[in-house]
Image 1 (cartoon, rainbow, N blue to C red):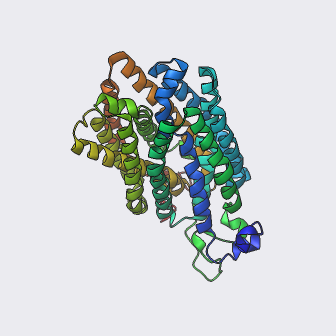
Image 2: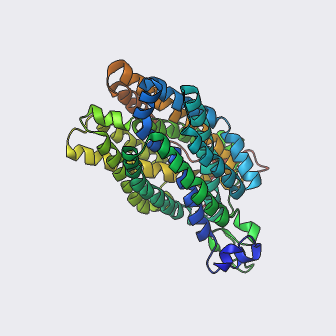
Image 3: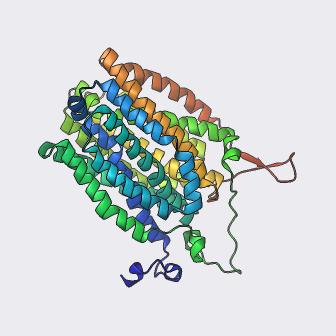
Length: 435
C-alpha cells in the first residue's frame, strides 16, 4: 500500500515489486470500462423512455444520438495529438471527470436540444479521450504481449457488460430514468476516476523501463525496432484505407442493432427484459472468446482478422432478422459476441502492430473519427427503415451487400510497404511490431 500511495515517485515505479505495466493494465482496463456508461448498450435501454419523455419518433432520436456522436468525433484527431503530447494519464483523468458530470447532467435534460448537447459531451469524452488515452497507454507498455494483454482487457470489459446491462435494466424497473443517470454519474466520478488517476502511468521509458518488462541491459539482445509511421504515411497505404472502411461498416451495423435492441427483439416477439439479458450474454461470450482472440491477433495476418470480423458481422445481421427460435437466438448471441471481440482486439492491437507507437494516438484519433461517423449513421438508417417500413430488413440487406464486397477486398489487401530512406526504388515489407 505504501508503494501505491507514493507511485508518483519515478523510482518507485521503476522498482515496483512486479512489472508496473500490470498495474497500468488494471488502471487502463478500468478506464476503458467507463465509456460503456454512455455507450449504445446503455442508451439503448433508455430509448423508449426518451421517445415518450420528449415526444419523438425513433428516427429523430436516432438522428440526435448519431449527430451527437458525429459532432463529438470531429475533435478526435486533435485528441490523439494531445494524448501523444501530454500523456494518457492526464488526458484520461480530465476526460473522466467531464464524463461523470455529463452523465449527471443528462438527468436534467428537459428538451431534445438539451438531450443532443449531452449526447455530444458524453460521446466526445467517452469515444475520444477516455478510449484513446487508456488503449494507447496499454500499447505503450506492452509490445510482444500486446495481443494477449488486450485480450485480457476485452475479457474484463465485456464480462463487466454482462453484469452491467441487466443491472441497469433492473434499476429502470425500480427508479426513474433520471435517477439512474445520476447514480451512474456518481459511480464514475467518485469511484472510478480517482482510481485511474492514482494508478495509471504513461510510457515505460519515462521510468527507465521497457515495454513488456524487458531489462535494459546493453548485453541483452536488442528487440527489433518498431517503424514509427506518421498519419500521412499510414493514410497512403492501401491496407490502411481498406481497414478504415471495414471499421466503419461493422460499428455502423453493430451500433444500430444495439441502440435499437429493444425494438429489434420486440419485432421478433421478445420483450425488453430478454433484450437486456441477451446483451448481457453477448457480453459474456465476448469476454470468454477474448481469451483466445489475443492469440489470433498475434498469429494471423491483419487482413485475415478483418475478414473474420466482417463474416461474423454478416452473420449477426442475418440472424437479427430471423432469430425466431431459441437455437437462432443462441447463434445470434454467439455471433455478436465474436464480432465484438474481434473488433475490440483489432482496434487495440493492429494499428500499433502495423504502424508503431510513436504516432499511435494521432493515427487512432483519425481512425476513431471515421468509426464514429459509422456509429452515427448506422442507427439513423436503421431507425428510418423501421419508421418507413415497420422493420429493419432493407438496411440489413444493404449492409450485408456492402460487407460482402468489403470482405473480398480485405482478403486481397497487401501488407503496407515503406520505401527505405535514401533509396526510392527499394522498399521493405512492414512486419507487425510484435514480430
